[in-house]
Amino acid sequence: LINMQFEIKTNSNGFLIPLEMDKIPFEIKRAFFVQNFKPGDIRGNHAHRGEEHFLICLNGSINVTKEDINGTSKFTLETGSSYYQKELEWLVLEYTQPNTSLLVFADALYDETNYIRDYEQFKKIIGKG
Image (cartoon, rainbow, N blue to C red; front, side, top):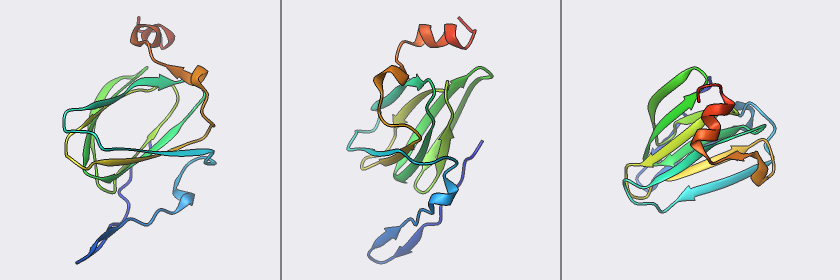
């Protein structure tokens, strides 16, 4: 499990979060930003087959619920913190602050067939349904 807090460099003009790619545990094939959601908005609600993601909260706060074969856990991503999402982990992301921004790196190009969007199907796949 890789959860880390990236260094946040601040000054009177704002902050900078330097990202060193050797901290990402796979070769990056794709990156995307998720932002402009209101507090209480939910994203995620899916898992991946054959795909891993590395999530970095660039600003704000996100409550994360993760479910996998070992059960369910909850944690919060805040500015500069990260989470390494392995395949077959169902994530629910609840945005808790305005102006929250999330950067995601993936080890695969976008392929809709990698996504498991039906929760009951996910439970069957991991042997819990």
